[in-house]
Amino acid sequence: MKRARVLHNGTELDITIDAQGALHTAAGDSLNEAEVSWLCPVKEPGTIFALGLNYADHASELAFAPPTEPLVFLKGANTLTGHKQDAYRPDDIEFMHYECELVAVIGKAGKNIKREDALDYVAGYTVCNDFAIRDYLENYYRPNLRVKSRDSLCPIGPWMVDAADLPDTSNLKLTTHVNGELTQEGTTADMIFDIPFLIEHLSATLTLQPGDMIATGTPKGLKDMQPGDTVVCAIEGVGALENRIVSEQEFYGETY
Image (cartoon, rainbow, N blue to C red):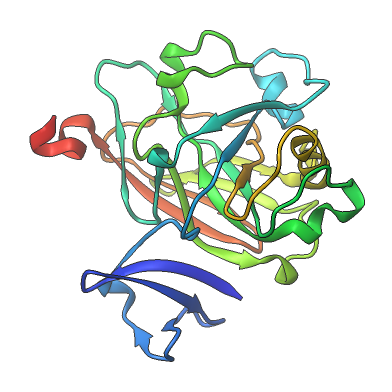
């Protein structure tokens, strides 16, 4: 089952998407996609765990040795936005790039979860684009506030696929297209630390809660983003997340 959240006529709705791509409300009504705005598919986002350098080819691309333990940083819910929503490029920067990532959404609370039980705690999977502002990166191992924590710079969606419908995430194709051009291609088989390992690792330190999300890193392939660009991050078996880049002034409008 594909589950999403949308805004329709001023009301937030939980919907499902059928095999033909049609949108349906819980009451069974059909919706016209042109009349909805997509929201984050997780109704109550918890902690967002993000992984640095979790693909060997991406670490090599940046001239780093692959990490020997997960490089985890946290993100706020302010960074989240939905499918087909705008994300912005900050003023006076030199390099902003996308990061297509598979996201595991936690479905029930757990502490000290063993690897063999880890997937029992996953409600489903979605796609995020964890944009990065490289100008302010002091250390690839610890991205600071200005690199990864800006409003709208972690689009997520379009929907969440139930874990039962995607039992094997070990070799899913990831692609990113910018204005129709293929600019990133990889596979989750190249993850250094897979999802069961990450769940075991994180839950050894804290209790994972429903709504927590684990963004699992990105493969190689970087391209600078400019206002007017449209970027589509797609993951096999999950979905394709599309967002447009606008200027900071256009994004914030009167509050700029």
